[in-house]
Image (cartoon, rainbow over all chains, first blue to last red):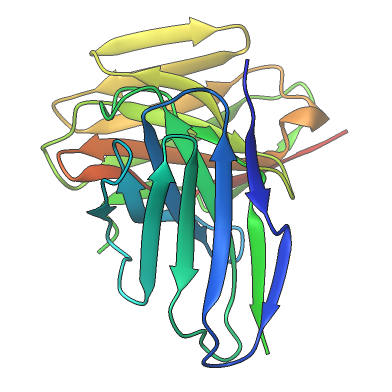
Length: 114
Length: 109
């Protein structure tokens, strides 16, 4: 088995602030993902990475940057936090980049912007 | 328009009853359908996947797929209070996995 760790668990930011979320996995999975979930609704893909130093944009990439520093870690940056924004950011990983592979999710980072 | 559409939005089921959830893709270029379950405050966990026409059963959970109509359904029999959760359907396209908005299931004793 393995585990996905996300830090921080809660993140409070100010409007216009640049905020960074981190994700680590010890599954030794090749592919990692960042999703955003609003109000307990569906997930929207922000970025994914099929290997170290690779980045692919999802449907919701505008306003975000990502970085895959090494195989086990994937960071997401909110480039300019929007006032009253509230969402949960979920990191996930899968064995390869084949979308038929099961994705395993981390516990999430809950963002609140004041 | 939502590419993966789920219905109903919410469902209340008595304990021991049957819950039926639906999911349809508006894009024909789909290979797999996934069902994930997310308990309140937790992360989603994969429940079942299906990619060929027909039915797949695992315990109390049954998934159907009709590829011609791009429709999948999840059925939970003998529903338990622990089945209360948000059920997310996802479909994979060439450009990635797309999730629906979910069906919130509440099972009452």
